[in-house]
Image 1 (tube, rainbow, N blue to C red):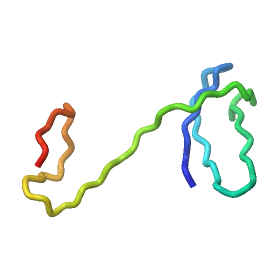
Image 2: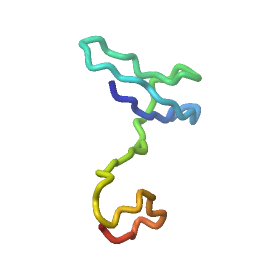
Image 3: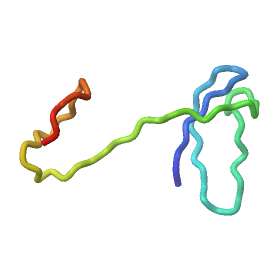
Length: 69
């Protein structure tokens, strides 16, 4: 089940909701104030590559401009 990040437009609270894929609908409202005036936000994600590639050091590139190996 995916976890989505939300921002409450009423109180500014940032929170995550676990959204199921079943026919049951999850009520989308702020956990702090109960407002339904919320906006889904972009979350972070991770990408994993194979460890056996030549030139792969296993470390992340902090600048985002590292050459491809």
